[in-house]
Length: 228
Ligand code: DX5
Ligand code: ZN
Image 1 (cartoon, helix red, strand yellow):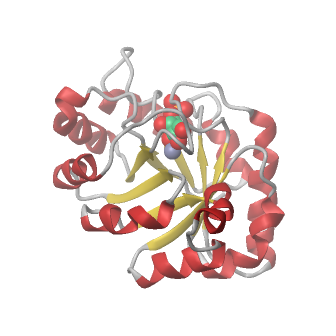
Image 2: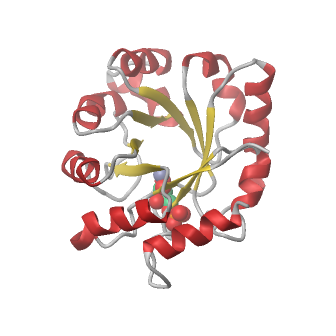
Image 3: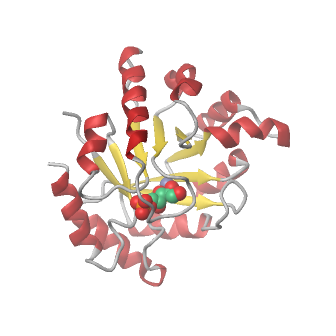
């Protein structure tokens, strides 16, 4: 079966100890970092932006991806990349609305990001069908399937959405492409292997890594073991 990388999200980490938390998760086997930027518009909460991305990039040697839950993704690409992001995942739903707000369209957003030297990921909200982006698959490096409503860590996974993971993996295989398929939301040791079986090769893990039950290092090791 496909190998599966773990991308911790710091949303539920202790920000007063961010450096140590990053290093603990790295020691537990974190493969890359998934940083959730929220603008209070695309999703209700605000999270963080460039300064925190920079702080994480100083604490790790792992690749950093930014998950941009923002209404105007292209306006922030430079900030993300300058502060250490190698991959930026923007939302299909935001890019589709952007032209009405004076911004670039979906295909243009992909090209803009690629021309800035970043890997391109597109995230799909639970209600968005995989077919919407099938033509763009040859142009991008990653599809992120949201298994929760975006905006908050610690929610329960909607396992019926794993069907979309299977669907996108099939489309990628059919087109002979080599893309990452990432799942985001509610991943725990008891359901991580079903994400992998559905075709995900990156799993985002927030509250299953940063919680009061164990250290980030211990929690990461448990999650890794659960993947077999
Ligand atoms: C939520 C974010 C997620 C979040 C996942 O909108 O996109 O990356 O941090 O947190 P858990 O793993 O707790 O569901
Ligand atoms: Zn995320």
